[in-house]
Length: 187
Image (tube, rainbow, N blue to C red; front, side):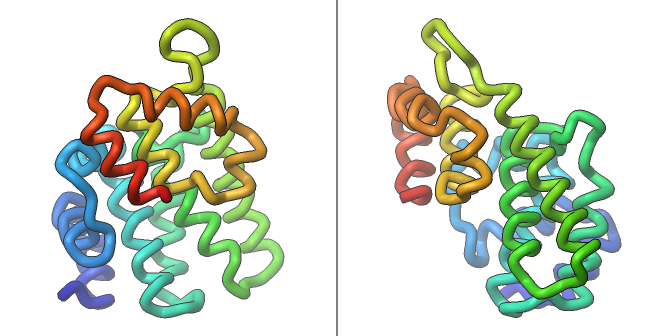
């Protein structure tokens, strides 16, 4: 069982792989393909803190000092292009920020968090393929399915990306089993 004090300690120690492993075995069960994408060193910090923030919000039902600390760390991971290193990390971070923005906070804090989430979603939109056999994908099928799992129900995401093309492309991707697991989570 993962505790909030463990989450806080792992974040402070920058033990991102340990944090990710704990989160995906405690409330965010995903298959191996998604786990490998989330563990990519280029986006590991954003993915682990984003998923941890989502889980902490589920457990606490409100903004707390820990959720604010996780948001600070997450915002520090955001790159100049709005992304968090990888498609999977960007999707996970954007969802965490959107969820945090729904909890009572000062107007300036909420605006900052929403702005960072919108910037991340814009990054994903810019990565969405247009035309050819990859039409609609963000990254590849697994990345696209992670986007749908994390953001498919978010109006802020659906209003920016070509969501129908993304879903059609993800369902037709060759790694159908791995993508299917993620699409089942998205449903």
